[in-house]
Length: 245
Image (cartoon, rainbow, N blue to C red; front, side):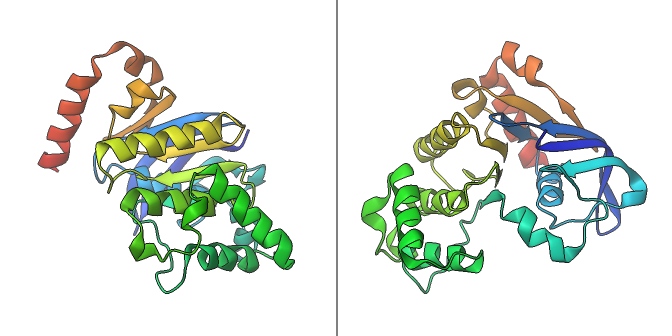
């Protein structure tokens, strides 16, 4: 099991956001976390990559990649994150350097030293996301979808066992969003688990997966529910809920 949470409470600034979280992820699983803004999606993801701590007195079990994160020292976090790929809605590319230098920076920061090996790995991930011809471009010269593909390439650099994607399509038009999720789905089919938060529930119809929903301070597995409902109606409901929040 890559992620195994049992009866975990998640707080943000001492406010209880999600109560009694039971959540699992394993190799090759494609997992959606849905829910309106403020429902706890991002907070849950932040605990997985240890941006947000879990109180060890307030959880039965919280393991990520076989390691208990309850007593985890901050010095151990970089080694854990090296086994993950993390993708954000706002891309978080370094805007003062080219795509190539963005990716070189990550590899050098995570311990790669051989220049030939570094450049070979960069070529591999750029090929995987269809962006080989953008290697010498600056981020501002790329479209939003292209920047997100580079962000995915960056996430793949260290052969992650799991990808955490926090609203990766939130700033993209529907067609580009579909292409990004298709790419993530392809990566998942190669064995890497993908955990993705989203409010775009129409993606679930085209790219089925395991579905967890955050609602009213709780999270539950609602996969069966999303196999049987009219997603166009659910999308309308979610959008109305977003506007109300």
